[in-house]
Length: 290
Image 1 (cartoon, rainbow, N blue to C red):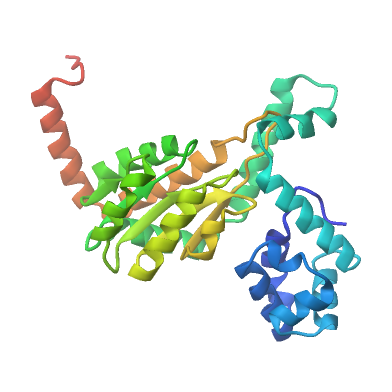
Image 2 (cartoon, rainbow, N blue to C red):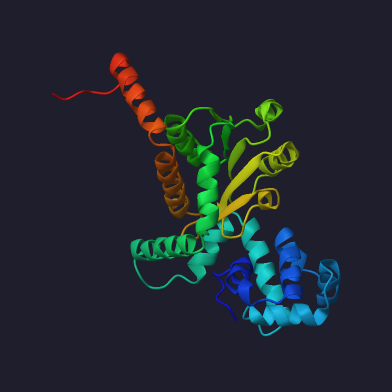
């Protein structure tokens, strides 16, 4: 059976080239309603996707499962993992913790997360995201949730220096309709949402989608429900020996996007940096050394 830390979604992406047309139809239906689209009986799952039960059986075997029951159990585990809180997460890793120092276990987990995250970044989608983040014809909006608002603030601070027309949406979801009111086709919304996924962030994506705004989602390996509305989705592996998930892989992806956007906007960005330095000198915000 596939390793438990490798999601069914990841398996589909790895094996997609080997799937037949009917198998790809099932894969597409599953990814559009993931993971719940595979949690019914094999007959119901096949009917909902408009394929035959043998098609479902063949595809799950290509993904490395012995049969549909194993595939079903893997999706159930993912669903449980997506909804787990800090207490359950801590219990999960503590029960299987090896007899080694927590610092070593932490370093091993973070290294694993980084490897999986960057191995699963599609370079074409990464370049698409950079083009959207660089496009000053449209406005860039940035938003995060209870935990991820710190990542959103970090991203906003850099993008605001790199390009014009950047808006950091407040942490109060009650104000979000005011931002949505001003969104226009071609604008970009950079969304951060990790487990336990926030219903207000999902609702925001629902409000934004009809306005033809490009939604870029940065989420974890299980994928926020916002992925159904997003144009581009980046999955960052997050599990560590803690009651909390790690944002290290997410931060590295964000910094890669920032660096690529900066290069994509150069030399306009250089002019902004030079003007910012002049303003900083006038405000005496930073200490100068002779």
